[in-house]
Image (cartoon, rainbow over all chains, first blue to last red; front, side):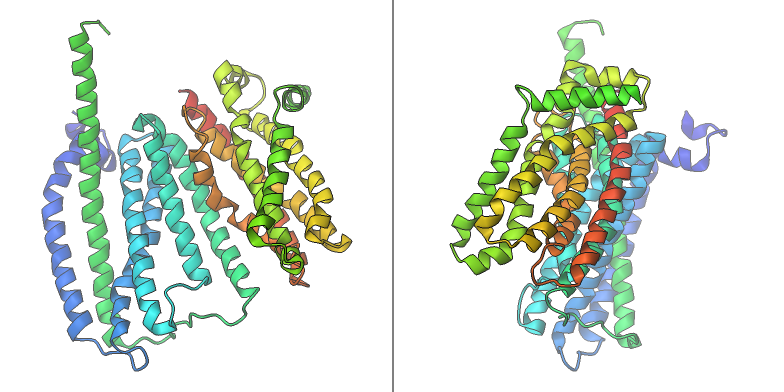
Length: 255
Length: 220
């Protein structure tokens, strides 16, 4: 067994799919409990123990949901890029699974960010949507996620899909900063005055604490969901393989 | 070099002779560009303002339409497997293919946009800016199309999924392409054109590597 072989490195052992299924089973519950604690603490801070903004009033509390989702929208793509490098360089099946399962999570967190941003924008700017640089590139980011999900669904065999999709994920990673830059440039050209004002360099601790706790809570949520999704995907592949084997043996043809 | 020249000649003949799709692509481009004013209305001043955007969008759609032709036929009849085993690195084959594709689809589109100019009331200066912008930006579109085509080459119905994946990558080309021919942009035009050319060069480096990698992995 790889898990017992002393010559196999620590990370290789961790990443061996069977061994991964074994250790990740014991990780999910503690991580989920920790995540719940962070959420309870963060939400308590956000709702009861942080000041309302002197201009925006209570709507500033949307920030505690919105900003961590914006972070995860980037973080999930980072996970996909790292996993794609793993797929391309080491052809590791666990990297394929990690890349595949991070895409729907990233799309969901990006969508939540856009929706909470629109809800926040309505009372603050008086409109749900402006074609601002940051909003527009977030929307494009969502469609990059959706395109990658659609590509995963287009392939019959997820094992064959992994490498082409890893390539497009990396091409996307090169393009995302360029798209962001060009959208900013495009937005400045017709209307010099930007709608979003930077939040100011100094942020009081009363706002920073709940925000950081919520960052932790959402990052933990991503880890829990990603681990669970990877386990589900591995189980799904195992079932497909078993079904194929059963079908072959029932057909009675020697392979 | 001789091999690459032979490859280019082959691609060029396949695209321009019977069964090639240059005429289809150009007609599609012209029809979309003529159709959009019907949706917008016959306001000449408005059409002149939107003209560069209309031409760029039509060119983008027409180039997406012809994306299947890049690798699919060669994948099906086995030529691609021969090229993979051939003496020239697959990256060069892809680059030659991108150039041939650009020459037989994008350049005719650029030429056909000249007779379309009076329909949008372009003056000579604006038309010239638009043509230069199209020449600078369409290589990036062709190279991105090659990435999309290479990734979906093993799919039985890859035609629709590839545009979905590569359309977001066309955003910089659209933004800077339209800005480089925007009647109201003034001095920003020059910098937009430079950025557009730079982006094309970057994509022309990335695309052959990415597409060749995808074509190799698709064969395993």
